Amino acid sequence: MPKISVIAPIYNDGLNLPLCIKSVLEQTFTNFELILVDYGHEDNNRIIYDKYSNLDSRISVIHSENRDIGAARNIGISHSSGEYITFIECDDFLHEQMLEVLYDQMVTTAADIVLCNFHPIEEGEDKNENRRKDPVQDYSVTTFSGAEALNGLYDTDRLFSVPWSKMYRKTLFKSIQYPIGYVDDDEFVAHKLLYLAAEVVYVHEPLYYYVVCEGRKGSVTPIPMTIEKFDKLLALYERAIFFREKKLKDVEEKSLLHFSEHFFWYYLQSQKELPNANDRRKEIKKLYNKLFFRLMNNPRVSIKKKIVYGAFRISPSIHKLLISRLENKKLAEQL
Image 1: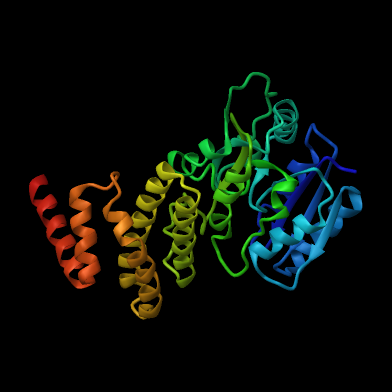
Image 2: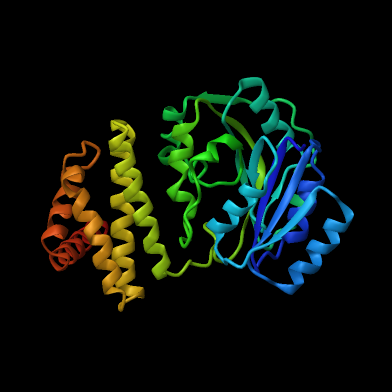
């Protein structure tokens, strides 16, 4: 019985798939299974699956008819037999000691979640050259309660919210599944997993290699605004409600500010790039209206922002005019 189940959802554009698989197979910790969940049905990928699954019995391949990342993660979890679960994206790869280090922390601290830093690598760079070869010996860790770790959703850049670069105790997923039909499926569950964890350990060492390619955050190529992006606002709205129900005032205040920042960016950007998405803008404005009085009473929000919030609730057109004047005033002050 493997100790760790490594789950890799695979879609058509998994350009780095051979390196991704190889980095798992070369782990210094060997008692794992690698579950490849194919939800893209690309013939070229199947050739790669067959090659590696024939070479290593620890690899299993599952073909899913549901072309959805959340469904792929759930399928991987349901087929896993390890006590611990970790995810890897098919564009990325691991330091050869990542499983060893995270597992050691899991066992020695009895943590429910252990996470490590990630190292971004540009798509054009030599990935083998950038992959660290030196052994990891001395590294620092920080230990949190689950409630304390929730602050990491706002104090770090994605580190605490993304599903990869982490190891989870499988029992956390007894009551939690990734939602189906959303691009940002992880945003709906990250806070729930952290909240359930009795202890979270943060390893201050970049053991996960995140490949910055087109269509992923960090790319020099702007990611276009799409209808699907509005779904993230629903996740952030639900997160704010979750914190309120759990009476976690501090992170609720942070979550409200986080929601408002994303809301205005998506609303205004979609007006430029998606002029025909009025129905979706109305939907997310309803979420904004539901949180409005909480936003106005949030001590983390400045008076200037509260004026902007109020103007938007009265009329998005007035808000747009106000923002334009503020931007012009700022520009004039710089001249």
